[in-house]
Image (cartoon, rainbow, N blue to C red; front, top):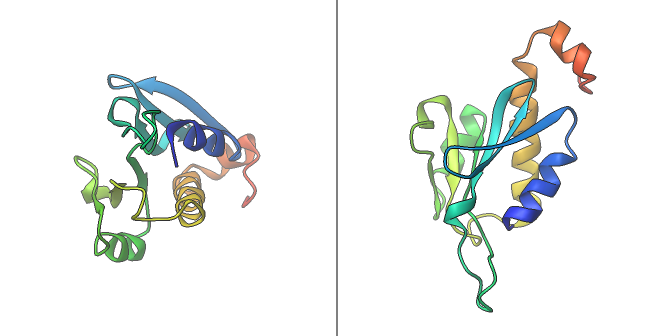
Length: 127
């Protein structure tokens, strides 16, 4: 998944907002809380020279964190690992379908931490 695909996917999740911060990172939030990050300046060039895969960090459940960090090219996210965030460092680590599922879960994990009132105001589907 490249940066454009990442941004397009995250933009379709309910009640998300997007900011570019921290030196050019694409940061996605729900209710003002971050659920996924993709640093634009770390995009890896594809074989044809165009920008390709960019490492993606996201929040995950305790169980998913333990499973994911055992996989090759998935590491505890720098500065965020204690909060159960991982960083996918290679396109071979997770296929796009699995990555999208984890991004959906990250969105839901963070969204469910919001107050019920905020969840309702945002129109989140699990309220």
